[in-house]
Image (cartoon, rainbow, N blue to C red; front, side, top):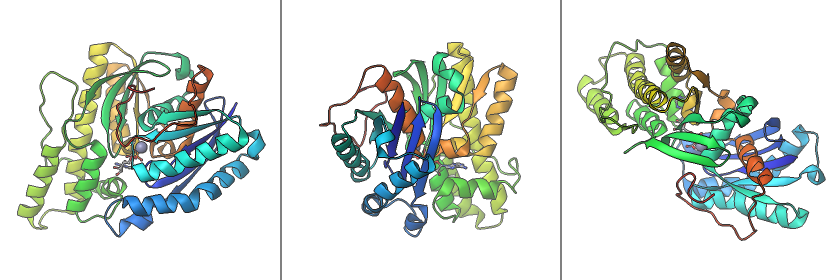
Length: 335
Ligand code: KG4
Ligand code: ZN
């Protein structure tokens, strides 16, 4: 079954064709990062307008790259929650129009569920090897999710304030680095000494929650007091290490408490190579099987949406064309 996936929840316009849930035939991502960089972050109105311009050409590109035409599409999957409402609306309106004209079923997909399926694309054997323990680290969310089957999620822990990606983005701003912050902090940190400056790790007690507002405040205070005396690469490396250490410690605790041996790290921050290396070290010592998707599948893309949609569709679930968009919704609550 060829599923056309559409993703427009933030500043990437993406269309992908995925066959049978995990075979990525094409995955086209038109990033708007350059456009938003001069504002220091995503401007929702600008994002929506660009999605309108780019949606159809991006779909055409996805079809061409897969060597397919519209009649070859069997179903459509679209991210409809959570995200910027005006941005989501573009993908959703496009999915509805195509479904109506081509008479195809549509599955709506929770954006974080999409991120989870990026791990299943990376390692298709996982599609029938549950339970899985998944750390979702994106710009807006940080959650540890237990997955007991397709569409069966339990949130075991989440951030009490900033998401990990937000901590990278806000940290970048404090360090004078341009948007998007995460990759720029990572690049600078590469040439720094991670132990030169120690930033605090949140101590939250016996649970699986996260907090990143403390480390961000510590960076702000440090930058003000230091006034440029320290090497900026050392500051970035120390800051990145503090975020990564918190993520690794929480996933290790979750694996220990649940006894789940297969763990995955997904979402934009999972593209961070230091995070991946530290997670691998932890997985090796704990004898866990770790899956981290390739960077192109970590950041927002439509292949992950098509994959999640496929597994909803084959379970017999699809959505009547009156479906809506939602700015916020808890994973597993509505689907
Ligand atoms: O999943 P994603 O592409 O979009 C959302 O769903 O939010 O995640 C975007 C986040 C941003 O905060 C971005 O700075 C961060 O992922 N990010 C990174 C890296 N690449 C993207 N953070 C750290 N290191 C990276 N290499
Ligand atoms: Zn995302």
